[in-house]
Length: 292
Image (tube, rainbow, N blue to C red; front, side):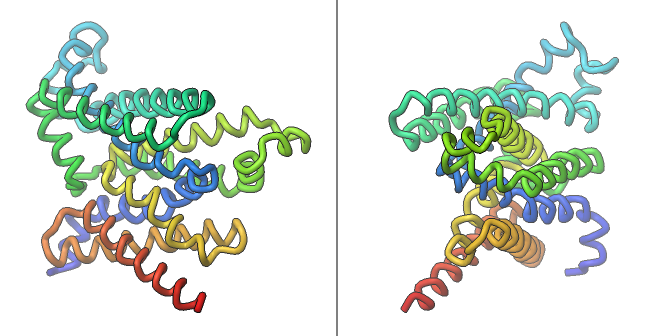
């Protein structure tokens, strides 16, 4: 394997996977603290469903709304225009699903059941929407399989901007998010703007999932939102350490997944997730050994 040629051909995809590995676990930590880690399973699938719906709606959209001055064939081939269009659909489904899950959660009942239902319905709808567009079916199929080797400059810029802003806000407001996640009433007593903080956190989660799904796919998002926070929690005594270890874990898992993907000619997304899974097993083993 010639790494020079690999970086020349797939350098943008590798950068996207590493950026996601460093930042997405920070968002996963916030979900973990709020005891809503299962959202990490449902939201990327909802975003993928939005992408598939965008493909199904594209002929009507081009005729009645328009994507710039492009006809349908040009819109399908124009990466920049298509990225913006599908990112809008992914965001719509992600934020809509997140808002619905939060609203239903305040009525009580089983959180696991709601998330499982959302995941199953979104999975079925993704297949049906993608079936309405031959191009969309191919694109969504590759997205779900974790084939993320066609990341272009615009996709990388979008991912970098969204995840960069998410990282800055999470680190800047980490103490506020922490107290709001654990005790909303105490946060109010301390003068925190609880509603504004919760909306900000929801915006961070939604933007991360929408941009991440469009760029590195739902498989990678699944893994990076859920596995790093679980793996490093036994080793994190403070919030700063929790976030730092999660970011390091995600970056290492992404690097190992990238290496194994190109070394053995395997889809990149599943390799990243399985590498994180292997590191999770090592972390659990080490934590049990330390507890003896």
